[in-house]
Structure formats: structure tokens, C-alpha cells
Length: 177
Image (cartoon, rainbow, N blue to C red; front, side, top):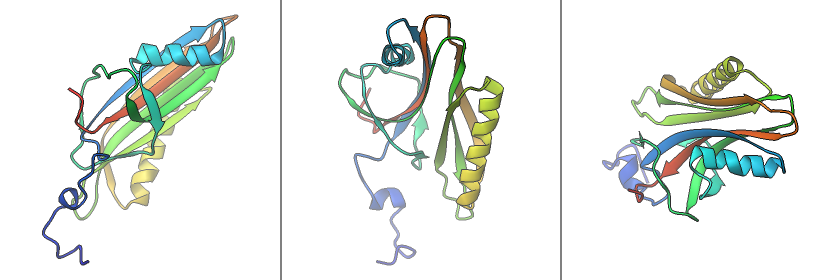
């Protein structure tokens, strides 16, 4: 099959219910006196995605995908996500972040890249790390990066608590409202 002479676009050739049409970005932080798992669950709740069955995927935004505001997802929905998570103990400063931006290559094809990061860092340190990750990802694809955005969550875990911060990019194939 000679794709160069095919008059159909990439989107027309590869119709799939697994190509997301939309996405949103969210984040949350929480603490628990019981466990790190409970802090994680509460952070997901703070982010508005605790009711989802999250499936981790890698970090490409399809051609034409558009960012939307967060919306309710029915409980139990299998939900594809790029998720950054950092758990912490009392006194630790923890951070998790997501960055995303759009590429343009010489052929004019534009799609998005997503980078995630976590660690014992400040918001500024995380922002710089995510920026460098996205830049290298674009360079590896021979593309230029534009319209970069960030979503970063951090906190200092209080005494006698477990802490968790998350940032997530949630994919939607267009079936949600």
C-alpha cells in the first residue's frame, strides 16, 4: 500500500473508537491518616476522577483532539489517562505534574505530546523538568513544539499523615456528553 499517494487522510484510514477526540486535564491532592492508598483515592476524588477505572497510556494527543473542561464520567467507566502520582510521608514536599503541547513537523502534521513527572520538588522545578521533557520528545520526532501548558500539584505532607498529589490528562473518544 502506497500511503504517499493515498488521497485519504490519516484519520480516514485509521478510524477507531480508541482514537480520542477530546481530553481534559485535572489534578488533586489529599492526605489520609490511614494509608497512602487512601490518600491516593482522596486525591483522585479531589481531581474529580475517583469513580473511573483508570488505564495508563502513553503520551500522544491525536491529530484534531481538543481540550475541554472537566465533566462527570459515569462510575466504572474504563478511562484512558496519562497519570502522574507522588506519595509522601510527614514533612515531605511532594509534587506531580503534566505538561502538554502541540507539534508541527515539516509535513505540516500537528499532534500533541504529553509529559508527566513527579518527585520531591517545588512547582518551579517540576515545570522546568516537564518543559525539558516535552522539548526532547518533540526534537526526537523532528518537530517544533507550540502552545505548551502545565498542570502541577504539590504539597507539604502534614505530621502524622500520608499524602498524595496527582495530575492527569484524561482521554475521551467523544462518547461522553
